[in-house]
Length: 548
Ligand SMILES: Nc1ncnc2c1ncn2[C@@H]1O[C@H](COP(=O)(O)OP(=O)(O)OP(=O)(O)O)[C@@H](O)[C@H]1O
Ligand SMILES: O=P(O)(O)OC[C@H]1O[C@](O)(CO)[C@@H](O)[C@@H]1O
Ligand SMILES: [Mg+2]
Image (tube, rainbow, N blue to C red; front, top):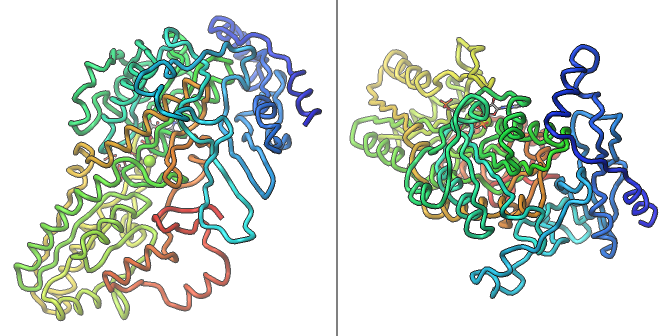
């Protein structure tokens, strides 16, 4: 530890570049140097702050995974900051401004004089508090991966008067966006006395192509009662350089970025560019995804609201189906690559006879196929309800398209429309049976509503945690709930993979036993799979993926 400490303190930290220096270097080097090899004159020493703070806890920095980066070698991305400890303890830590900016002034957290908080014993989070990613363990299991616990710190790295924050929302709509915006603004104002908060209009491109809006508690007072985002959103238009230029030009030093997997990837490259320029700017992600496809976190905000609202469509489908002879109600729900909304809406409803999701391939004809099952249910019950996630069965559709949206996401075919037609054709032409099929697509109606009470509380905690982290000088993280605790998760853990329903795990088994639908898998395949390898991402009891 001593040698580590001396290596840390020996690090050389010249002042960060200002915008003019940076532009001059960039202009000079345009034809001779790739931007990644420009000497930016700062020395990134990841983890050094931690090695002194945690020396008493027997922790050590794994310097092989968090090496220093000299000014002559600018890697594309920051190396993960990993701290290991006894019993197989691993902290996947988040970057801190002091990792690359020397001698930052530190201030007492203004919350300690705030009457609402000063009476709360242990209100401040201990600097060494971490949250385990895996909570189901065996006697001899290693302690495993942990994340930094979110919350207010005793010391902050920004003076409230100096903070100039901005908020941007990107990607598709999701219930709760306005609540998160509101709570970031109110958190900054009321907890930290920050008065300068800007809204970026219309997603990432708004940084450089649109005007900004001033945000204060009055402006955002009622917005949580509305769906959508008051800031507007967009896909595509992520120009890292222009975005960071705009951040620098406006003197913004806290950037709150609300969005899904694509947005978090965008936030990660903004953080890298900010760090490369040596700017004192905290870049913070808040995960928004109605599909619940962001990994690591327990669930995303808006997901509960979406599942609840989906019940209305499923109820309508059920009422229609049971009112007609051989009635079939078919509901399409969102879920491009992950069938969480469909799975949870099905489990919640109990009226659904079959749920089709992208993770579980299905087939129509022959023994064990969908047609056979529908016919059986109609004979047993006289009606049935099908729920289908938008990304399910895409491989079955004849004309697959290579079209993409502005963010590069593949545009999907309407699988529910296709399945409806195939069901109609099969029963009327091949089986000579009269069926009554009603197809309901409530997807945009679900996405556009305001968040429910529980999501509103969740959004509030997420937003406040994001603010506490930025004020404490952390950066390059996503604020997220892990095992019921607010944490700071490094961007790379959020962007490296997607959250999927694991069909060889318990939650999907619960669904199959609730609907009695076929699994569309041969039992032999499943057994072989189980013996071949453990599922890459086992599902926890709360329905989320746990790391191995
Ligand atoms: N790899 C990437 N690097 C930089 N920016 C990205 C990247 N991927 C996506 N983005 C940007 O992030 C924004 C949102 O991405 P996208 O449209 O995929 O939505 P999302 O955040 O995944 O939300 P959702 O899919 O849940 O609606 C877009 O402006 C897009 O340009
Ligand atoms: O029509 P848009 O705005 O591209 O959004 C559709 C996509 O957005 C999502 O809801 C994710 O936000 C997906 O489920 C869906 O495919
Ligand atoms: Mg996405």
